[in-house]
Amino acid sequence: MKYYSHYRMRDHYWRQYEKICHRCLVNYDFIGKLETLSEDGPSLLKMAGIRDRVAFPPIHQHTRGDEVLKYCSKFPPDDTKQIGELYFSNFAMFGYEFLGPVKSNVKNS
Image: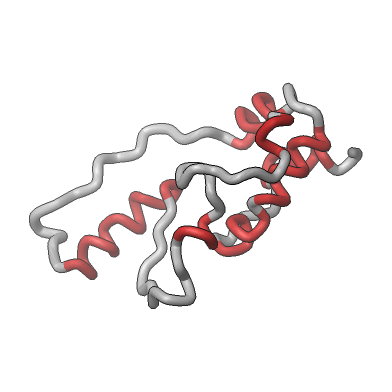
């Protein structure tokens, strides 16, 4: 985690969305979230005109906040906060609370 929390060039899997989604160049008309796929999926398929031919599989489980907190509690709070700050724009862009379930871990750091 210490390695990642310092600035360095990252491959496209780890870049912030603002650096790869080109939101200033692309006029997005739909942004969905995995957590709301059961609602977002049918809307997207309807917009694409393929709702009758394609369906998203059901989502059976996602990582709960307490699981994220348990995992992230293994890392130093300062590192977690620093990584969160690298992705601050992602939290804001997609309507997530900054640091979400791990906020309680880093507030005292």
